[in-house]
Length: 115
Length: 113
Image 1 (cartoon, rainbow over the protein chains, first blue to last red):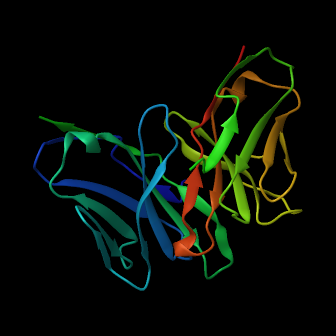
Image 2 (image 1 turned 30 degrees about the vertical axis):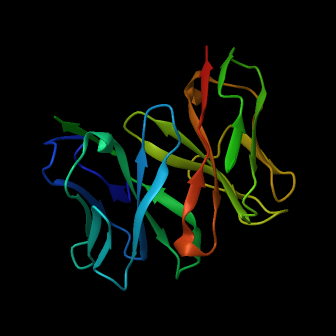
């Protein structure tokens, strides 16, 4: 049972445009969400996070939006750059329920930013 | 900054052989993790250690054992490797502050033939 779902395996965007990566979750106990970026042959690196008490968190070109009622979050990258081409993983944890030690990951979305 | 270091980076095993993946972190983190990544499956938690001296099963623990040797080191052992264990393995550690962010090593590519 996939508790964190990224239904788009790949996304292609032109340089300078907005990239929107989506993530859905089913576990209502999840209260902390993160996005990780992964380049080939490297480990995932932390990008941005959001707590369930917020609906938006912004860090430079990256913004994460959380819609708790829909159990949906999205990552916006504006403007997209070729260096953003990577696999993006959505992750979630149930910290208030004592599950803060475990992150559940989605299957990832391969973003390609084209010139 | 070394961060999370794991060895070996690449390994080919024959079915039935055993091996240990080593992991060390220099960030003084309490929690450490082993994940595996497979195509179309994302990252799945094998085992984790919330603190020195404790270990717990994750989502896919079968066929693996772990040892939290001290606060810095967390090893993953395959006692009798199977082709289904062909995967990329990532060790990670957790910063209890800063929102539970987990930091990953660079990965170990394991092929079981």
